[in-house]
Image (cartoon, rainbow, N blue to C red; front, side, top):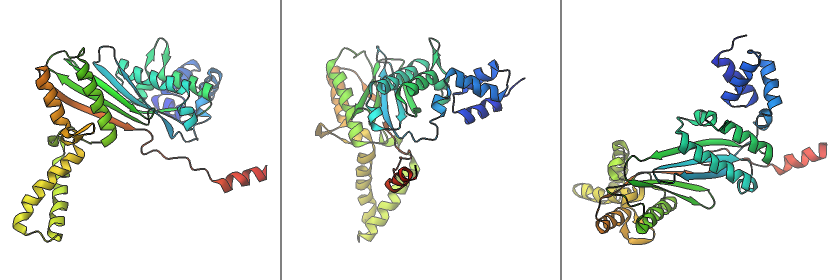
Length: 307
């Protein structure tokens, strides 16, 4: 019996298993859906599926940077409880997933889950960890940066992975052995975790976002009684403050508020005798936007009484 991509998707929806596992199961059973589900059970793949209805809203942000510092990755991996999020098997899973992102450069989570190294897919890693830990586990998202020339990928994990930052810097010459450069990159990544900027430079801010802010600031200035002919000057100053709030290079450096992050980088570049540039960054807050499990004590008591 032949099967289609829709059959693979249907089996995945029914069992919670990965796409590649479903495809293997349908191949092994000649496209028979029931036998394919049984095949998955026999292989232990459905262990994760049994827990599919649970909410995996805890977890960690894990990070990996290659030995040469040119490739870096962040990955958010979720579980059900904070206790498990701190356990060694789960931390090992997070580290393995982040490394797989860096090494295989997947296009999306589905591709990542199907990526195979030494005969094991990421889905295999997740299912094995699920069997060992006993909670629903999932890979939610990831980001990967890669440099062709000189520079560095730096990461910072706050509170054991509750916040993860990946920072990419570009340099004219190789500064990988420069301790001051490495420290600066780490400090800037830590700064990002603390201040949550949205952009690196003001010119990255979308024009519509700036225009909207100007509209708000204009209304504020007029409501404050500012003369119309002075409003433009007032707005110019407040837009600068707006950029300081959302743009990394305009922010006061947390370890030395007398300098902006942009000044910090420029001063170091002069000292090192080469141009140094912050290229981009990514910041993940673990569980951001996920539904949280809410325990209802009354319901739990009622369940106990009805047993």
